[in-house]
Length: 407
Image 1 (cartoon, rainbow, N blue to C red):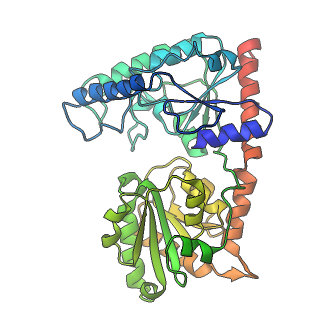
Image 2: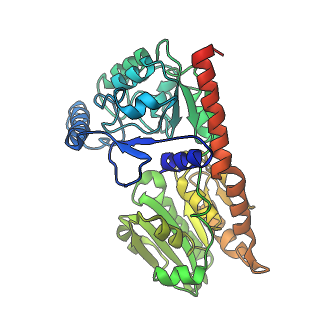
Image 3: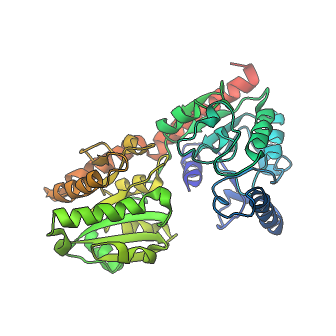
């Protein structure tokens, strides 16, 4: 999604950009797909099978790591041949192997790689969860037994040897983490946030949005959004605890506040919440998602580890103040008590206090919500298509100059 938004921003800024994907689900001519879909599925299965065997047939971390042992050679595709710059994003789960990336590097074309997590700077994992091995060399990985991590680390080291990749992170937090990696030490790294189309994600009428989504019109709405709401990393356990604390400390909340949950498995958590909860399920249509955001009084995302969550950016663009933990790139997005609330990490009491503060502060001022207005201003200033596209164009120019003139 972030890659697609950047492509649109670049095209709108005079750069001819196309996106190559493993699975094409659109008719857009700016999106190209890998050939032989059956082969892509086999590659996906083969990588999981290898990980499953190395995990001693445990499914526990099966989708938390990637080894890039199989993928497609894209260097013979016309889209690749036409490109001045090759820009990698999230290439895992059978799209590109380390060997395929090595071929891209050997082609002589400048390569930019946006890190949406730490995988390019570690052996296997996307989030290190406090592990520091990647600062020296990944070896005994806590996610998988045996020597697989050290093997993949060596392959990545060989791939990068005598090559330069211009890395971009979506948050300053991720940039600082990536700079600790021994794997990409010495590589150019900068931070550029994701872009968002503020013509799509924008404030609309709350009453109409609530009616469209069958939510209470006369109550304050707390919104939680995640692709899979039961994902531990997204902090649902802390959200449930915070809601319990909120209701006990401020009993009136039970009468005038409800919760909306957007995402897969949303129906699995509603009974655990001490406020009336409405599971909205998984939605992929952007206009429907915008409608859901506009139902909210406050958006809460207590992630335990996150880069620059699109959901917070989308919520702010719709004029909804946010509450999240002080972790990852979240404090870069939410300005504490200006357009939302940044709670102390893993502190359910402070999270509850933040939700209450926004609910009480989120009062219309001259027909407009002051916190929501600040949130929209922040998005337009920092995350608009034009702002982000211009920063990436500078990176492309630097990559081209380095490749052709060794500058």
